[in-house]
Length: 197
View (cartoon, rainbow, N blue to C red):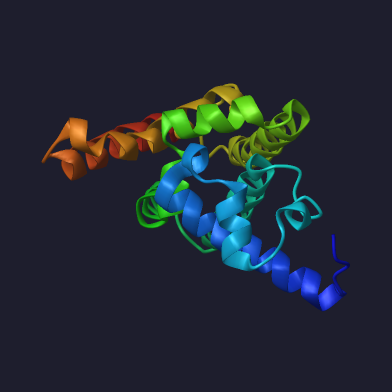
């Protein structure tokens, strides 16, 4: 396996990430091979493993990068001067927009895709991801509860509620032509239910 300079390492890693994202988005985790990724990047297969232990680890790294971009947009929105109701609505709108306009994140949310990743990814990485997600969400919810913005329920339950609402976008076809109206009604009900009166 060739030794890469620091600049070459960065270029190869960038290529692996962008090519992986493109192929995973198009074909999914199962149908994308390390061979296809390294061929597109012009490196030997053995060199891939100097960067990632498996294609699942590459997928996970791309997922984290995409989610961190989404999380930054959410933080920016939360730092704006909005009413609690506007903040919750904005949080939902932004999350839906990211899921519907980012093909990679949309694919990650598909049941079989995520289940395959869970089965193949080392348990410690998966647990670390879930804990970090829960920590960030719980901190925000606790802050809002301390400020008397939202109801005083277990933060993990509220996180579960928010996650389940976000999965609605995966069922656009099943819901049919009234999807946008269903989404607006559901978001309104959830927002009103979470806010303190």
